Amino acid sequence: TGGNISPDKGRLDFDIDMSLLDAAKIERETNEIIARGIETETVWITDEELEARPELVKTMSVQPPRGSGRVRLLRIPGVDLQPCGGTHLRRTGQIGTILLRGCSKIRQDWRVEFACGQRAEAAARSDSDLIARVAARLNCATHDLDASLERLLGEREAAAKNLKTLLPKLAEAEAASR
Image (tube, rainbow, N blue to C red):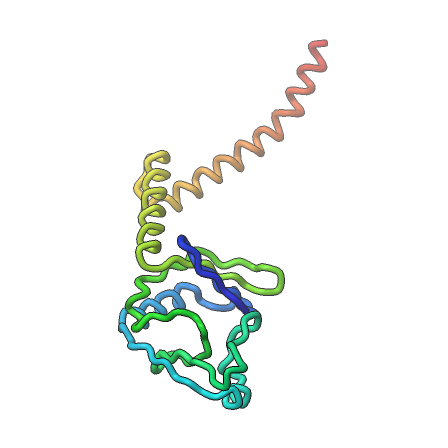
């Protein structure tokens, strides 16, 4: 339904339930298209042709510019064709790797946040550093983090249960000592 690109991240909003989709597969297949370095093409059609082909307009909040008699389309051969008045790359490889950063429900839409190119590399490096720091604090290897977390959560749950049984006994002991 819309989107935004900022210096550190991008976002796209969709009116489909993203929880039904495989985000990892989408990321992987998008990166495969990027890696192919497909040349993009500019195509022009008339306003009337655009009106006759509503399936070309894939965003709800941003409509293509009309009124000049013709509309510019961006074609990625074998991938997509849609109207767009913005700046475009000459080939898909110029985007760099895409890294999905999150998917969340925003009102009735779903928002997908991502980083690409050097920003994706920086985000992945930061994530890796964080994982290494957490593993070091837990005295485990990074591949053992899940098991270590499960163990800690189990210990916390057992301590909470123990506390729940000890608090009434403490209250009884305090009452008896008065």
